[in-house]
Length: 475
View (tube, helix red, strand yellow):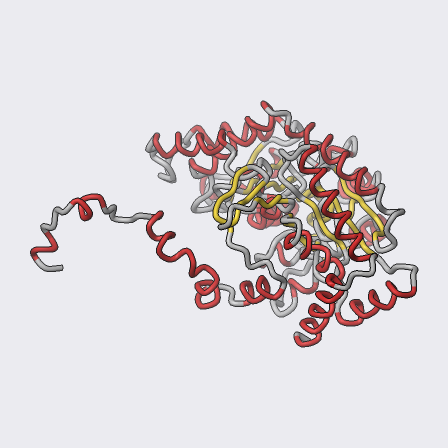
């Protein structure tokens, strides 16, 4: 910069900020897909373009986003469950403005600020059998914490988990991830062992070996939306206690009202886990946060002396912004009756979808709790549809569910997801604030897509053939 530029005091120079986020987005926001291709996961833009999901969303509020043309989209995905209160809830947003404006002495590492204690107190009020909380930054970190604490507290090496479970993708939590597609190529992992969800006999056989620290379980598996059978969690808890092992319940997706109770395990009386993992919705959609809640004796064993005060910690854990967001989320949940609302809206949506099962031969089951709903498709009876179904299945299982997800977005502007690789299941995990208007919109759109799939029109099946070609090319 020359001297003249250094002292340039024209109005334009005077107004220019050192960093102007709005100007940066205005100048370079249109490059979003190219930037991902060059610098991030290059397969993401490729996948989005293949299925026609390469939209440009300009803004969001509540259960909706809007594209560059001003069209609204109904969000039935909630950022994989992160947006429990929808996007930009005013109470959470104001709390974050307040905590930034307060200029707190945050993360000094050598003090005890009030916000973590207040958030822990609030969370434990919903978990009366638990005593202490560790705050991290994500769901997988909450699971990692539980695994470490269970191993240290019991002095045992092995953790049991369920086939098809999802507990995260860092190395420890990946060791208890029951989906081979996520594990392949990342060995060696920890020496943990899978059992089938609901199989008490398998659980008992593994516990008999005497080396099991804990059993980690999702009360409702995110992959496929499969719920633990009635009585299973209580019976598993009794087995574990007899054998000196711990029960870890992963509520990262199911917790904070998602299933119509504060925690999903609370649907089964008498279940009192030793460790509980939460995250996602606790963030308010703004600041990453995870929490591991546990019993007093476990924490006291891990942090057994002043020498061990930092034996497990997180650089950004308990930061003021995350704690303020979590406190605001729990306040909104209480003030707006979010748990009861999720239960009522979920019951309405699930019942209206279940009423369609007898109407459409490709639709096999609707299941779930609260606003965590699985819609499963299966082999039809009629000869014409059987041939088309067989074509998809031969190429790759899960393509029909993808055929439903795509027109829901492209024709009806509703965002959903297939519930897992090689599954013919769509999972609905919308913001917990949706109501009857959103239920009506989704059911009407889903009915229209099912009509297309079962009718004589070929557009949906033409897209299916495109997916088949893509699946074969990727083999």
